Image (tube, rainbow, N blue to C red; front, side):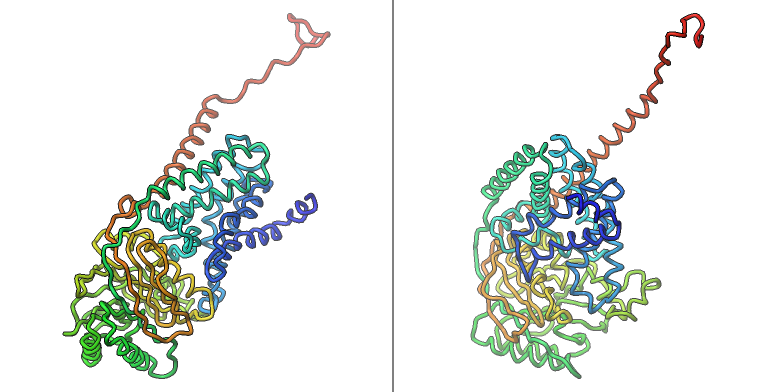
Length: 524
């Protein structure tokens, strides 16, 4: 142990170890999908920050671990952003510096049982605030939230309906903190065990209490995935392939056909021929077709990504313009300063334009759908608002064509399970090149995924439910609770500092008299 401590005295070696420790949670996400590992993945990082010689060094451990975490969960962006991904991770990794300092503050040295118990509340709260901060669209959005690693665990999906992915992240960090305390802090083992028991009891009660989605109808939704189409005139070739696949749905009694993101590379308002072809498909199949247009609009300036509903008579008028754009992929933040990113990677040469509001579309058969485009499916608040506005089905249109062969397609598809469970609404994730997936209102997967090697049209029998989940009703209450915990901590620390300042310095004791001194004549 002393050899390890001596080896870690080098700040560079220690930072490298922290980065590796921070990267461990990547194994919990697809494609490895080791969901159980999430409950111990943070322990090495916590133990490292706890052992830091100072709070300042612990903050650096938090920063370095955050850097490793962000590089790991976004590693598939490396071919697009190149060295820029490391700069972004270095900047955003600083969000974990206060978390590292708090680990040292509550678990460093020989913490009392009280400090150990407080850590089980403060540290998960601080982690949740980090996830909240980096969930801002301008900082990349909520990709790689710890709670999302539990997308295939039924009890976790039930808890997501209560507190969203936020509640799952909080519980995962709390278990990691308890595990770290059990392995390294003898004095606080009893509070750690008690916390684990209390956590298990609370989650079990929430699991039992949470209302289960009551199925009250069914619809048949077809996903059209054309697969990879390269070369010259790829937009025309892709449209032809999608048209061909859609014709295979004739006679299958579908209620809606969904194409993926950027499935149409031309403005339908300017290409009446394409609109007529899609309308003909709608008449032939007997269902509306939801396409996704990525093109410069003819009725207003700018390039938009838009979900457009086409019926048997042509454009229905239902349109949703993407609101939350991918930084660097669809726009460059502060282009005047960071525009050089286009010279080192595949950053957007021209910024896409943003939509202004979410839209619920009315489809035939009384079906109401709520479209989301690409990484908007990572934002729990957007799907929650669509459910509040009356959407029966959530529809995510995505591409991920650039990231074939990486873990990105599987990880993106898994997010649909969380959004479905949170809202109690089925979720359809339709892509151009895979992975496409469909989930029921409880978050359980319906039928097989369409992988990245598939070019097909598949029909899914989708159950409907219209109950209101606690998450839809009460929103991001775990985040509000975490902010309250940290506010109370700041208030307590501030009050403590104020008391110390008011008490003033401790007066020095009078010098002791020796045998040579007398009360009347000191010093003699």
